[in-house]
Image 1 (cartoon, rainbow, N blue to C red):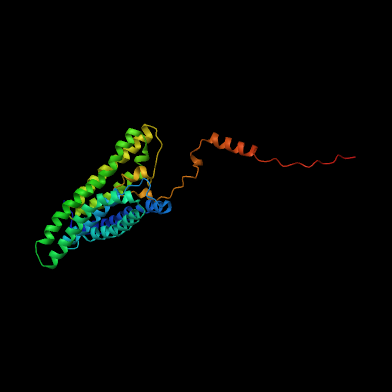
Image 2: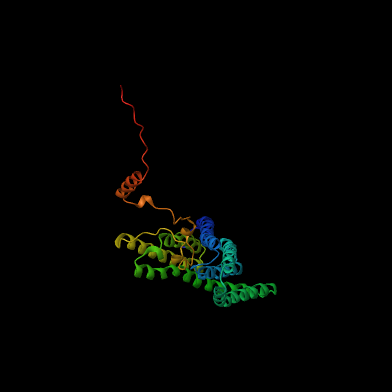
Length: 294
């Protein structure tokens, strides 16, 4: 591969595989912040289920692909990352569904049933055909699921770009926080490197696009904050950006307290004014009169 020795390929894959797996698990775990709020409020509020449905389908297909094209074990880290991601997203999806209202459950099931049935049917076909000893089944499974993974990954990485339109039209980074673009870039680079050295276009192509789309989001954030002078939202996790975080958002793991005043962002004159006004409002102690000397 482009002059790389076998040893170099092994070293790169042994570094980028575990690193990509770790980052992918953190990315999938970014739903914890949303689920924590859903449990606390006992309602899904304005949070969307679409990111979790896409992640559920994506992880399932990657697991099937890794098992169908195991080969010399080069798909190990792909299997581990998406196997763990599948567990996380199933739990997330279950909690989300539990706290849906009746109408919300109806809409969720209407959208989810067909893609989930298709994936389950495909997985059952692969498993039973493999048990029956059909020699072409793994190759067919790898080809079909690999292309499906590539397309679905592209959709997931393009998802946050839908927030570009909202951010630019409303001149607000609330729809496109910095953490959303950074998450896409940071997660895509190891997987692009990993897929490139093992010569798997289904892995490196969507992640190459992920790097591009992530950088596009970061540039848009810089434009809105530096050129347009808009308020900078560094982390996501709110309902405004969550629906666009189809690939996850590290920023959703950062705890925020909306009730906490950001004193550091206040001008120094406001600091002094607040200090003076608070001092004037304090009750003044009574000074005892000292008797005069005779």
